[in-house]
Amino acid sequence: MSITIKDISKNFGKFAALKGVNCEVRTGELVALLGPSGSGKTTLLRIIAGLEFAEEGQVFFSGRDVTDHSAYQRKAGFVFQHYALFQHMNVFENVAFGLRVRSARSRPKESDIRARVESLLETVQLADYAKRLPSQLSGGQRQRVAFARALAIEPEVLLLDEPFGALDAKVRRELRTWLREFHNTVHLTSLFVTHDQEEAFEVADRVVIISEGLIQQIGTPSEVRSNPANTFVEEFLDVAQFTA
Amino acid sequence: MAGAVSTFPTRVRTPRRATAESPVVKVVLITTLVVFFALFLVLPLFVVFQEAFSKGVETFLKTFEDRATAHAVKLTLIVAAISVPLNTIFGLAAAWAMTRFQFRGRALLTSLIDLPLWVSPVIGGLIYVLVFGAGGWFGPWLRANDIQIIFALPGLVIATIFVTFPFVARGLIPLMQAQGHKEEEAAMTLGASGWQIFWRVTLPKIKWGLLYGVILCNARAMGEFGAVSVVSGHIRNKTNTMPLHIEILYNEYQIAAAFAVASVLSVLALVTLVVKAYAEWRAERQLMEAMQTSEGPNP
Image 1: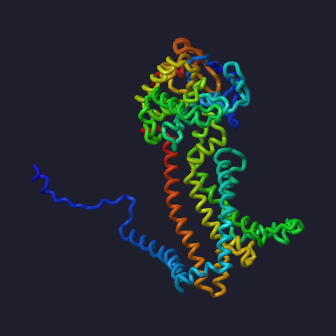
Image 2: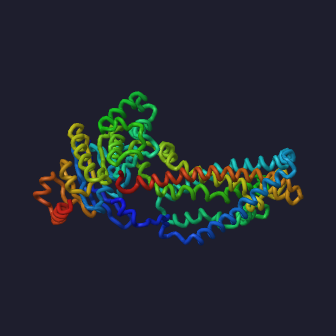
Image 3: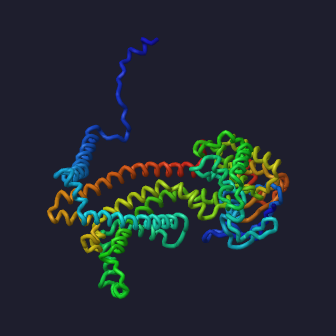
């Protein structure tokens, strides 16, 4: 499924977070939304998920207008920076949640839920942790549970908000390699937000660079690096290279 | 080598924290506290039970066979059974609105929730007499339609609701603020409806804080005197709750009976205290967990 963003504008009070943003994530693509903090990247991601609504513009999933659909209807897999796991449920129940809340008609049988959750935990290498509570896991493990939970509903798009932002450097590297490999096998249309240039360039097929609510450049990592569209991109990449 | 070290005499001392006061101050403060507790909290409680059983267990039990006393106990339970669930719902709704939505006047509303705590309960009762009483705003209309609020059960319930309104909301607001609503958002993206989110995600998150508020609310609902006294009219077998009945018994020099009823309320208070301490401890843990998981890197 592809995602199309058309002329999206969003204000928080007097602050304009997004000023007429256009972009597209093609089917099966892994795209990074890269920008400094306060650039509007997370807001854009939340608008795509239906967690935030824009004053102007439209969101399309595979050409279908979902602008007025709630998050509940869109069912885009969403991974939060701070995991947002259900603290009172164990790992298994966290992953099973999206299946259990379905209406009686479309809810899988208990045995199917079990099989699906177990295979997902296998995928994220947490099969032995099904009975643990989130508070008993490390940050990297928590984020993998969050991945599995988002994937359980078989979403057609995966949205990730700084998915590695709260992790230490080593786990971060491992997990982003894992994400790239996972994407290579599944080709789930994915959009992830990051402020880390290295992360974006290493993992993504294409990079969308955003600043002050405006898109500065869209392109493959090598295109952006060899041919920055404007001084902002040039300077942002330069600075990022120093601090990375 | 060992000998060289041992030539220095070592002085063992218990280290004290830099912020600690001198031992004298410590002793004085703790003694004051203990004496205060003994004099103002433990002693009265002891006297209540002492007086209640002063004429033997039989007299104690007989007190509750008295029709008026039995009715007062029943009425108190009824008033609490109506007002506590209602305030639980109001409190939840208020806490939800205060923590989930940004709107004009939110700060004002937050402080208004506390109004019943800083206004005298007597005034709490009086305003309802002025509104619903015979000479009040709605008095003539109510009388024309044969509805009695003041000097009847509805008045007692309304006054109790007024007095106990803040407890649930006040317990929940800080908890829900710390927890944020990321988990609810996650549930939403997973396809859960509002109702499912409330029962499966929000309620388990706040249950101890909620229980804490409900217990305090219940204790106050059963023990309230001032506001209820104004709207009750003290009609025996009709509008006398336990606290009001205690006063009547006392004024009629039925000291043992008065203390017997008082001892039941005191037991309620003690049970409340224990459950409250437990719920508070669990609620605090929920709050700590919320603060941990919503911030920074993890192990």
